[in-house]
Length: 105
Image 1 (spheres, rainbow, N blue to C red):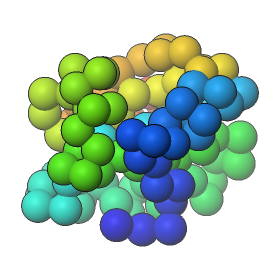
Image 2 (cartoon, rainbow, N blue to C red; image 1 turned 180 degrees about the vertical axis):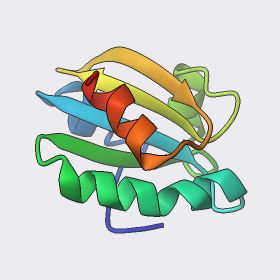
Image 3 (cartoon, one colour; image 1 turned 45 degrees about the vertical axis):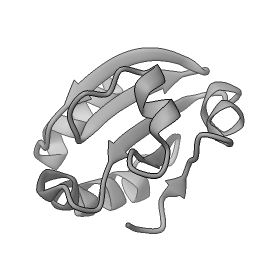
């Protein structure tokens, strides 16, 4: 989808749960219109928030992780802080709203 960190069922534990800081995981699929609409937002947020990692999980290719986190609709964004779930968001949104949800500002 883009140059963002691509996470799989095999790498999720290492890439997300063992990480420190904030990781926003985008659960998406290539056929999802709202997911495609968020691609530009995610790329911009990744460039603007140096202390936040944006990662993506393709739900079609990585169903175990999607099931584990009960992802029922996409896009779903799960914000991890130091490896723990801090917040969950569903659906496309404007960049400013997305940044506010991530940073709490």
